[in-house]
Image (cartoon, rainbow, N blue to C red; front, side, top):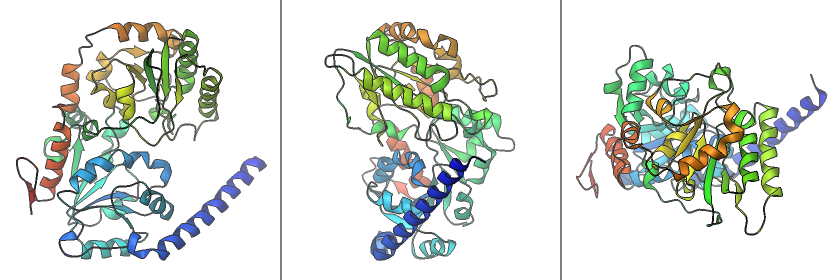
Length: 409
């Protein structure tokens, strides 16, 4: 084994243990913040369960605002198992944090609170420690709609309900999950995130149209190797910068580069390219590592992305989109309506992507209306948020009024 790699691993482990001890000490010093359990009508009625480290916090950030809206009708808490995550989320979440490192801590919360629904954004194996409890409704809400094989994992059978964006997701589950009643076990909520306004952290050159390139990560196995940074991205970005025709927002997946040195090197080459080509009066080049996902929808005119949740978030905007074709032939690709209809980009075509981008930006009618309805249902302002709140309250046994201004227990 490489001695340098061994040394780096040992150093990382030591740093992790030190940070963990510091976090636990901070939590113990503020029990009223991290282990507070309210009484009476303030008792929590719903929880978002998150057992992950902060590297996966992108999965829950997109649910902050929908859950905050839900908390106006039923108190919501984020249940965290990791001490560093508890400390970090306290500084950014609009919802209270409850730190529960042990099953006994979870039992105490359930005994004192009125938890009727538990939401899950991923399929962490520790989810099953929470799902052992029978009383709450266990609801998988995921961290994005996509055509990845992850979206029809057999693990979904373990949840009482799956909150899906639209009919396409229900059809996907019905097709791929054996011995599973997709109609009974799914609730269609649209994409409540599209009903949230997101302030942009950057100012782009208004003289140019903007391309959003938002690839997924490289994956951890061949069937999930949808990431396009090395196969498409570096050559496409080079062509875009050389053309001088477009602002570019590059939004890599937070987990990009963790399994592949080549993928990580591709990220760095794009970063350097942006730095070297920043000039006054020229197109804007933004290497976007912000925590916020959503402001890009309003700022960009076209999106290039992979088979991932980004494609479906963008689809709801009605703006042009290009989906990359995975170079790895072992990547699981379905013959979904979206992938059959949306413009595709192979790795061989990536260096000539500027021509396709220019053509699509100039086109006025992208004929996405039927696709959007199939994947999201009604996307009028506020419709998805309304459905999320209504379905959440329904599985909790609470009846919202027609205007959702109040809810009856």
